[in-house]
Image 1 (tube, rainbow, N blue to C red):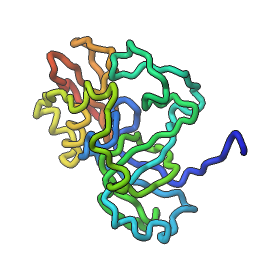
Image 2 (image 1 turned 90 degrees about the vertical axis):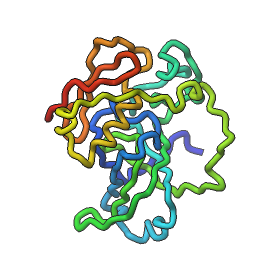
Image 3 (image 1 turned 135 degrees about the vertical axis):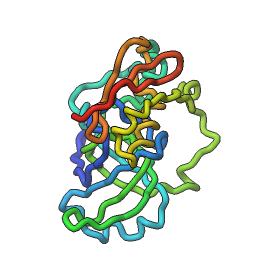
Length: 229
């Protein structure tokens, strides 16, 4: 058996997050985030997607392209634990892994035909940045893939936790109307590293061609500026 194998990029995700900072930390947390899966030219055969519209959700297997070649460690410090506790890399979803591969479950909103790109998958709830290489797409099968009684491990302590978002109308008006719910949802998830809690510090990330700047104090995220990039 070979120690290494070659994988082919079959598609790329196209979305509104052009940097890692700000992207929802898990898939499905912000259903309002819509993206497109655009297949590479050699995989634009419509036959490859025959029957996919019968499924409501899909699994995306993808590459942590921003971290490829960055190395890895047997233990990592999960942001959910404030960056203070170390756990085994295989007990976390850290992007710094022996094989930098990610797995996300997304909702399939539709299959669209583009004159130049062929069939494109429109999905919601992705936790990937724009341009992320997709290695495979598989249907989500509820009777086999859903485990309502599964133990959540260390993530249970922060599951469902969200910030109150204060978004002044004058700044919200700078965001396209069809992007507002997705942006508000991403902000409510608290994009900051878990170990940072300075109420005076201003953070920012690019979203849909805008630079969104905010700070967090007393359990609320306050948007302080929105500008074009």
